[in-house]
Image (cartoon, rainbow, N blue to C red; front, side, top):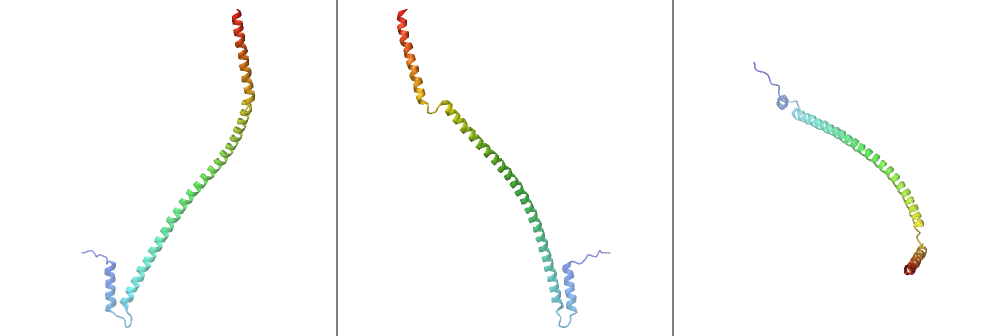
Length: 144
């Protein structure tokens, strides 16, 4: 025996429309009502599909927002650490500046910035003593 194949939805709809036209009800357009019913089912399916797509989109958006939120949290933590490091380094820089200023001041005092008068006097005494020894050397060189 031959196997029976199930009717496809298109064939089933055409058979049903044929039966509805064969047995008309007075003043009721049954085939048109059936078409309207099919259109409503299709539009309901379309609405269901749109709702499903909207739900999927919302899920994807939620996942994206969660990932972005995680990235923002990570970046804000890094920013907080950078601010802490900046504050530490800026305070160290201030301390180093103060130390450097104290060192320069001490160096100026040691070297004697503004003590050129003392230097000129020292140079004069050195030249004078050198001249005295030069003259004494000439005098005593002839004596012996």
